[in-house]
Amino acid sequence: MILDSFILFFAGLLGGILNSIAGGGSFITFPALLFAGVPPIAANATNTFASCAGYLSGAYAFRKDIATDKNSLKKIIIPSVMGGLLGALLLLNTPESVFTEAIPWLLLFATLLFIFGGKLNQLLVKVGGKHKHANVIGSILLALLLLIICIYGGFFNAGLGIVSLSYLVLARYQDINLMNGIKLLISSIVSLIAIVIFIANGTIYWSSGFFVLLGTLSGGYFAAKLSRTLSQAHIRMFVTVASLFITVYFFYDTYGLPAAMTDNT
Image (cartoon, rainbow, N blue to C red; front, side, top):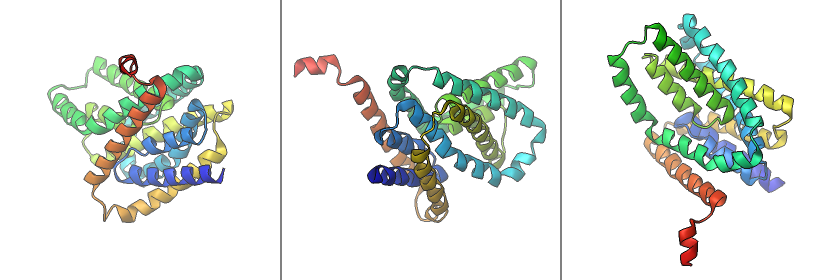
């Protein structure tokens, strides 16, 4: 129990640092919860709880930037609430065995988003520059896209910030501070709604989540100093390698070696 607590705190510490500098902290905290013996669905719910404090503090830091776009907040808040609710309910109604088999694919999706998210957003900037979204159909499609993104966030939190930025690029946002603020606002709302559902269902492992949360908050605090000495490119490379390794491990753990390889041995 003491060893598990230390591992969870250290994972939260590292995850908090990564989230503050380059993102990708869930690649560390979610597997750590699984390795500590928390069941997959509960580990996902607990990870959402542990990550939420960072979203809230970040959104608070960008509150002045968010306030400059008050007229669009309803378009952000309503889909975020609905998506967080639907995603959490979808998770709780997914059989444990099905979710366990989905974990490698969810991690792969989040890993690809982390690696190629920047290029995707650059592509969307070019596309968005050629097409206006002022028409009714465009507005409806954007709202549906945000709802889908928020459902994903309520179901599996990793990578939510990256896909949220992609939505904001399509919605023709340009102020990076405002985009970061709204991204964190979306993540905060989705996570809070999901957490309420998880609490009502008794899904969160509070003791495990507390150690991850404590580590995450500590990591976020120390990241302010570390960010001045560490290269963001090197941090992103570390997250990329770690996420690929973890994804491959979960594919192996879930599906084992391919039949052709086992037949040859």
